[in-house]
Length: 358
Ligand code: ADP
Image: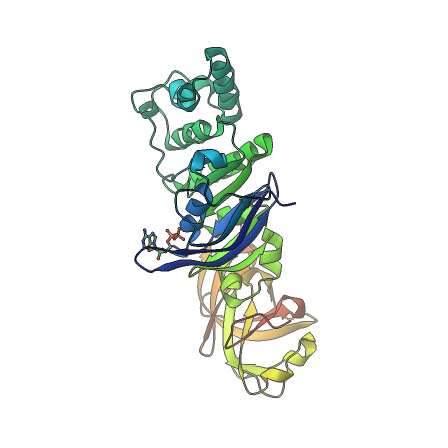
């Protein structure tokens, strides 16, 4: 049986705004789930309903198979880390971490053991006597996580915990949180708008848009088998290239070249004469002509050398796309190139519903 179950969860705010629609999810104990999507898509609202900080308007939330809708945050056994990690400025790191247990009236030896153990997991042992102001942003966020972790809870919730850190600290903390999760095994739900955080940290990702779940899956499933244009474009950096065009005689035309889509073995009959979306990832292409691939001519507009790869901005007639190539193969700006999209790397979507065509 699942540890946490969200069954047709809806949130309608008192002003009538319907922020979350029919959210369904089963979570196993110890899983690390990430809710990802653009700002305003309902991630925090869903997290806050799980935390018990926000009423569930409709639907059922179960913990270990028991209805939990009416339970308060403490009774649910959740701990939450927020974006702004308000530490007590006049208290040492030790006292900040210990505070929750002290409030619960735990005895001193127990608290001491817990604080030291938590500090060890978080790499804060050498900083226990310091005040928060003498710590870096990343260290402060670790104290905030420690404060939440020290209480024995079943569910660990994090709402954009890295958004106040700089890019470098974010990368470090990303792997640290993954490590902490491995050590503690706490069932975790993590909210972010950053697809890289989602891809690198999650066991499974829930992609949301406009209050609706778009897809639930492992990072690999979302990358290789996106169910629609939104997920395909949201996961991956630079995003997937999309070419929207009409299907005629089982093919499409890109910059005067006929692309025969019948070769892909997808069910296209119903789309004859209709608009479809042709998608391919920037990193899926090969420069030059390859076998079992669509070969396309393009003109190079701009190149961005990033070190481990180069982003090549190309035009094919009216169509603009991005290719990701090995930096040693960076083409000249204004040159004309040929590139190949392997058949197995092509995605097709219904132009109207934007759902993937299998
Ligand atoms: P996210 O976390 O994905 O950025 P939120 O869950 O915070 O999104 O918000 C989802 C939507 O609900 C947004 O459009 C937001 O403006 C709206 N919203 C959030 N809180 C309230 C509220 N208290 N009353 C009315 N609408 C709200």
